[in-house]
Amino acid sequence: MKARMIKNLIATATLSMIACGTFAAAPNNSGPAPKCPFGQIAVKKNDLWVCEPLKIKAPTKGLEAVPTAGKQYQAAEQTKPARAKPDLTVADGSDTVGRALPNSTPNWEKKIYVHIKNIGSSASQGGYVEVKLSNGAIGKGSMPTINPNQTRLVFVEFRAPLPEGRLVANIKADSTNQIAESNESNNTKTAVFQ
Image 1: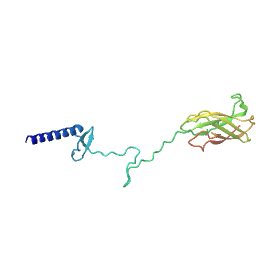
Image 2: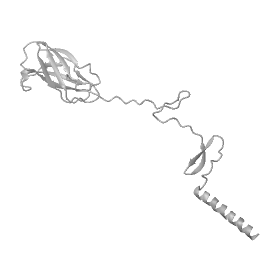
Image 3: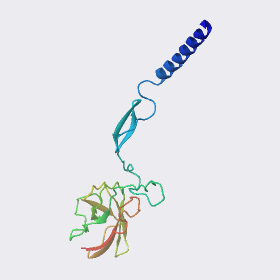
Image 4: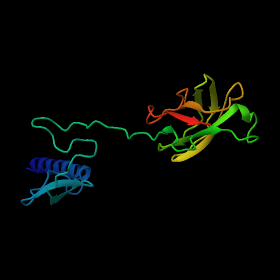
């Protein structure tokens, strides 16, 4: 009988140690989820089960708002915002183009001025203006940096002094197309000057 009692005592001690080890490895109430009241769901927070109201989370941004029937949420196509660009034009007005005034610039007798405007949303960096005159002469001028909504005076120089009288000028801003503009089709204008 003593042997049986010792055997039962050893079995009980072994089971107690196993049970203590299990609870030590899984503290608090980390066992199975509890049954929650209607409208609540068991949620595990910091190794503890708690009952919380049921919440339905909408998809995060970048996903379609509603899936189509039988399909999972698909990532929506990402579109990049349009990059700000300059947009150079030949300015309107009676003073669009004219002869350089005497002694206003070196070689003034070979130069005309042109007003170039940036109607874009970003500054233009450099570039050239080309002018073809009705007498066949062709001249070029370097454009300075032109900020958005700013008009700048550009001198265009020809190889020889300009003849007296009325001339027609075909003007092209960014004549070498080195500036990426929001509208490349509005760079030209024809103007008359004396």
